[in-house]
Length: 145
Image (cartoon, rainbow, N blue to C red; front, side, top):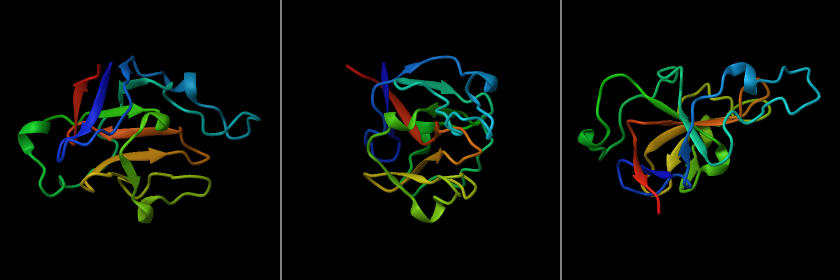
């Protein structure tokens, strides 16, 4: 099990989670006309996966005080989590728009509660998965006890 922490200040951002393969889209998506919740969680609680479509989110420049050596460079890597596994984050309200929940159109909408660094994106609108995407360049992994 591991936890994710803010690369800028070290604050904890997740509960302990274990890595699993990303689910196929067909395994988690429910059509909008289904009687089932139209925005199911993409990831099971207590798990995370590497986003098979890393780079689909425009993250912008790293936050002030960010140490480049901690997060690295190169191919973008995004991490998928269940929203219930978040701790130590706050909503960026002016980017929280959507009709039934956060749509994720306006860029990162989750910040580290410790320093305010933009660290992730929460989606959960009627046409999206319910998921959190953390930017692996802005977080670090630590083994959890």
